[in-house]
Length: 173
Image (cartoon, rainbow, N blue to C red; front, top):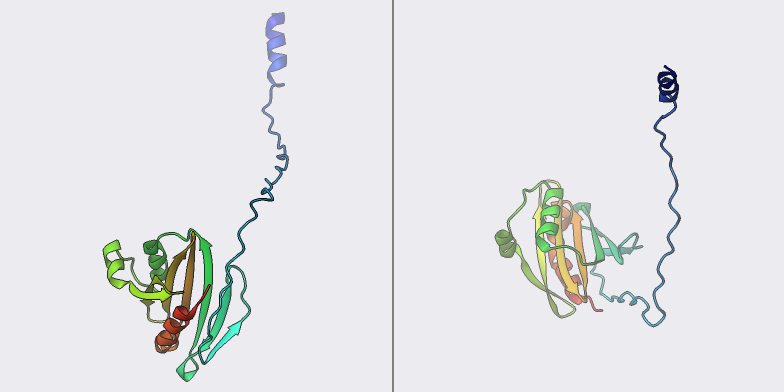
């Protein structure tokens, strides 16, 4: 009987307890002095008539405000990304943003319009929905994907396509 009393007395004492212990901060690895990160390339360009350069923010290295005919606004951004993903994923994301269905890799090849950036080949893609149109150039250079993108209403973007192409083709690194 004494064994039963000991067992019964000990049953309520084994509770599950949860402890939260913060992780110790890990030191950031330092880059050796002989291998500093490469400096970001500096771009030069000619700003088309009617475009207003605005301060670049976030990941952008350049931003412009464009006012089209009848005061229709558009925005131009220049964004470099390491890697940058594949063209099909990027184009389908833009198509989704304007309310269009995704396309296939074969359709992507048919929609790619050749342009040049800094004298090198690049591709221009268009996605136009009812309320929004996007013109985007994808250019790859030294492990970085450069996105030159104009977004706005179709009435603001469509007439600016020649100026956008001229801008992109005039960019120099």
